[in-house]
Length: 320
Image (spheres, rainbow, N blue to C red):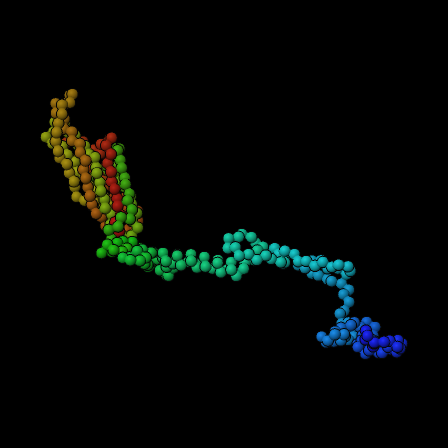
């Protein structure tokens, strides 16, 4: 090739030389087959090579849930549904430990924060009363001299009491006997009169059914009585306590006298009083048992459980 200062004397020859040089330097661009594409062979200038296109033709883009979109021609758009509690899909991450959302996903940061909160609460609770303090259903927690401690559950029939040092609670068994198991009361205000020395009912009665044959029955009676006489030197009566037809106490008598003036009767003796009877009985039965009082005339003309004043009988079953 002529330089800018060369004298061109043979132009066709010069073009032939130029063409040969171009053919040599652009040899890689020559040839190739149908469907091939040009690719760089190295980083050197003008160093290319022909290669076969290995990218296949796309005929369709098919999708399934939760992917959306797709198609067989033109611009194809692909998306994804948002997740719900019933449908799979994309979820948004959240660092919140207080959200109530059911579609947000917890990040490790939120999970760790929730764990720390729970661990702190658990540590605080255990600091007040450790969970291991109690071990058995029915245990009781109380404070000893320094810390909360356990009082194990007692046994059937025991009661909670304070120990002898007055420093802690304890379970104690109630001593046998002496327990009041039931109480029955009977009353009467109905008059019952007699002039006989033989005993008869006063209308005061009560019935109790002991829960155990070893129980005792404490009988407490307050009997209202009257004895009257006219012109006699004295007047009085006898009272007995009965279990059924059996007298269980001896005679209780009253023989107190006073008088007042009465029309047609120069002197009338009229004695009124309350007679107490206390007796601890051992009926040795679990059958219904009736207790009652009977009266008898001692002197004078009339003896009576008098009308208008209440008489009482109380029956208490005492456990053995």
